[in-house]
Length: 537
Image 1 (cartoon, rainbow, N blue to C red):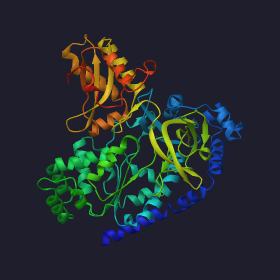
Image 2 (cartoon, helix red, strand yellow):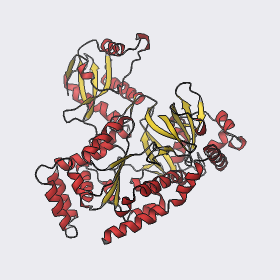
Image 3 (cartoon, rainbow, N blue to C red):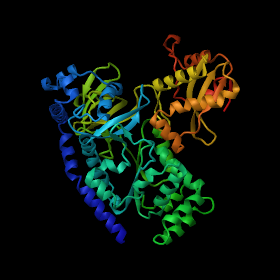
Image 4 (cartoon, rainbow, N blue to C red):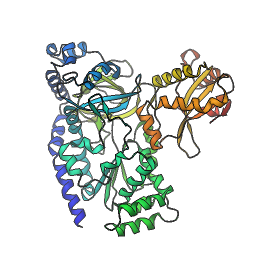
């Protein structure tokens, strides 16, 4: 009872600290146009003396229209030279606020992106985290009584610096702000030190040990639902290993809990055993839209009585939407950034208060972190309005992305991988394609479909390893491989007529032959059933 009371007090202090942000947001959604205008005016004024601000004449910009006319739409490649200057230690480059760290994200023409984070951007995230958490706990008061798990992942960067700037947050709780972080340490289930674990099995065993020892777990927050599925499956398939870690971590203080968990996991534990392990688990927060829709539903097999809340659209670069009212789709984070939206039908650009229900748009953001009119390449559908703020549902990436487990493989990067490995092995295949396939364990891996007669059989394995090394330049692909969210890649040798078969397949789907575009990356599964040939690895 004492533990529960302590959790309740700490949770209430933490959530109460977000009350002002909640009420500010409630006022803001009543006049989105004014809020967005004031945000942009302030941002331009604060950064008019930066290298970027001087280049685009921020001092002379006095309206949204002039801002749009003066600054072009941008992608990450437009910021590479600025980020290099920041890494060298220069200040006032993109923002007047000092850059504290770079946070990695997936790239397109560049394999991985390092997004500059300053206190301004962190505060902008907190402007939405505050009302999100306040509403979540108010709508689910049982959350006050226990502990939460915010996902912690093993670090992917051995070199933690780019120039003079640190790379990466240690764990998700660092997004919660100073007060939230220090109070959260009192009720965190898995310690942040777990992120330093480099062996993936050891990482899972230790994470599970802390989670299983927690008797009053009420909230789990992860990004990709596959992450949690793999964690729970590891528990069921390696219960003896997990129990050993539980006995080490829980010896003495948690002896009764250790006995209880050992009893529940003994024999042949089933998926629904987690319902007994965490009877108070009320909410699971994860991605539920786009490609995560299937796996988020799959989590119900493990946690049948737990409410699953979709996270909305939150990227490394920007906080776009979050769940605010359970009766609505996630709401636009109007206090966090300046938003523009490109209509998918006519490519016209609209502001937040100009959106129409039922239409799809590509998101463009301007943030206090130094991204100006930045194309996120995320497609959203406007599903309605809460007061004057649009509610959004994530549909897909705008650019050609294959993303089954969070790997975010981009066609332009995959093309670069192909070109470089072909040069290294001095081959010019008749046809090549990278596509996802289903594995025997019901997981996903990527397969390189290759039609080539010059590559000797004894070099197949090295060739594939070389290709994957280049794929691992993509931060998210490497992350998914290390966590086991993707299986090892395969090589399929096509006998003949790869290009013709590829085109015929799209023709059979209703496309005109003149509209069929060649691509080195497929998003759909099942190409091994279409091409004649065999797996070579």
